[in-house]
Length: 137
Image (cartoon, rainbow, N blue to C red; front, side):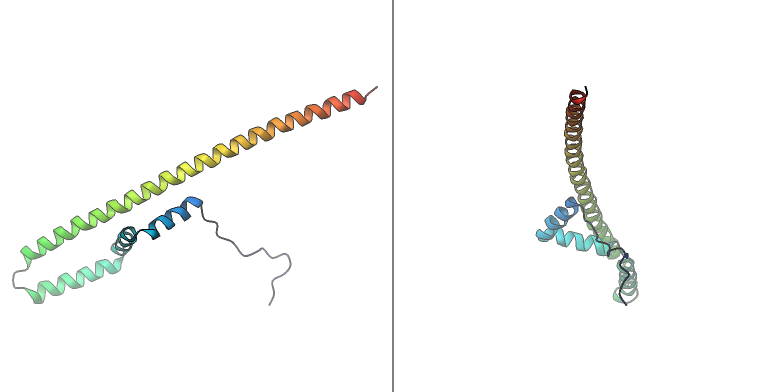
């Protein structure tokens, strides 16, 4: 079945240039890719389920008195996870700043273009008015 002639074209997803540059920068750096993968996984319910199962099994079967070791492991993991949260926040902050800067530059360029177009329209209008007035008897 073919779409009718007046059918809208398939939607094209436009991506902001800062988003593209940000993704390319992060993809080019191994450390940033690792941090992104850990942050992405740590923010899922699968991460929670794995911890519930792992800690539960360990407390039941691995040690008779697991509380001191469990406290140490959970504390160290909290330190590392908070670091990854801060890495994610820094990434979002850098992205927001880059996008804001790009948007500012684009708006300034648009303002300059509009100002020049307005000046040119005024000049053309003045020329047309002068030509029309000269031709009148």
